Length: 514
Image 1: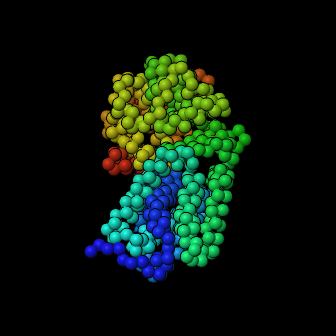
Image 2: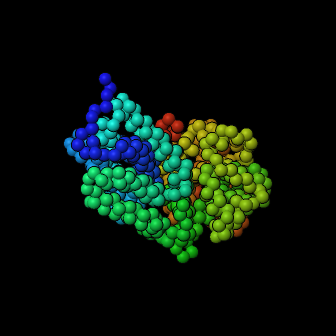
Image 3: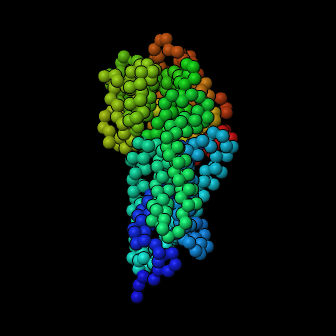
């Protein structure tokens, strides 16, 4: 028979409402547990790059730690309810402060990964204790099959809630630091609800004091969340932060020191106002200068509007289509006066159409032809960016390139990462295009590389406008000359199924950064 065993000891004294509180607790702790896991994985990908590796290792470590916690639960031989309450208080403190703590530690610890995985292990062990303890606590209140069904149902529903809330609501609305504090309060709320239900059956003074102390620390953290974020980012960037926001796609940070304003995406420098003109002139004009009549131009990426600024300065260009994933990025650079001054209001020009979409999907659906294509994506630090450097993506872009058109691709540093740099050329050639590399010195980046591509071999004949700040006909010709340490070498083709570029990029830049 599937009977409910009789309650004994403190279970017999506990109020009937306790079973309802405990079942609701399953839903809450499952949601909180997955939120902490997602926070750790997202923070690791933001701060360390390569989201696939970071999420894979964080999830693996977290699940292993949960297994350890489940195994350790067998050693809890009495007062399971009291242990569960204390576990909730501890998880609330660790999980609630996890995002803030990791942000604060990143600029100051020598090996951030040790702190990251130590925290993931600690939270995982505590979370692994929760469900076994709950099952043992509830065993006297439900038949076994009903107990397992209820617990697992609430557990899986909690996981679904967390997985939907995190990317759609929590990160864009609250940010990661506030999200940690809010769910820490949810965990300690479970502990307080249980202590309230048990107040007449046991001494709760010590646990109640600990729970209230954690509540106070989490509320203080919630109030100070913006300051904590600023402290951590000022320490990380070593520059005053004037704007910072997490979007569903990336962390956008603007810093300013004196006359130098810098944009960082997920911690990676995108431009400095002191020398961005070198980068953008080198990106745009070797293309426009090789097209006889560039009436229609496509820009993929470049949500800051700086490449568009250069393109729109060419009176021959009648229309520009700019495709950038993040609407917050294009809104920021369209509506902020000091940024509008930098890009000369390019994103508000009547000659431009801004499309906020995933470029990988957009190019597959696009049908128009373009006389020039500017590909200005961030470096391939992770697989979601690496797909924008693949043979299949370049084949779709080549389909949109007019027969006499020319395109260019931002291709990382040929000095720091020569294998990665020349992989872009090999991949463009595998997509059926002729490719030709060139490079320019940008002080903020060092030697930086680009790749021309076309349906025909890109020649030397180029027409440049007068009075540019960096490029001249002579300096433009010199950009195509590579010394031996940057010279072409055999490289693989970057495909969706191998992502060779992401791997070589991480290896080469990791060796350079030490």
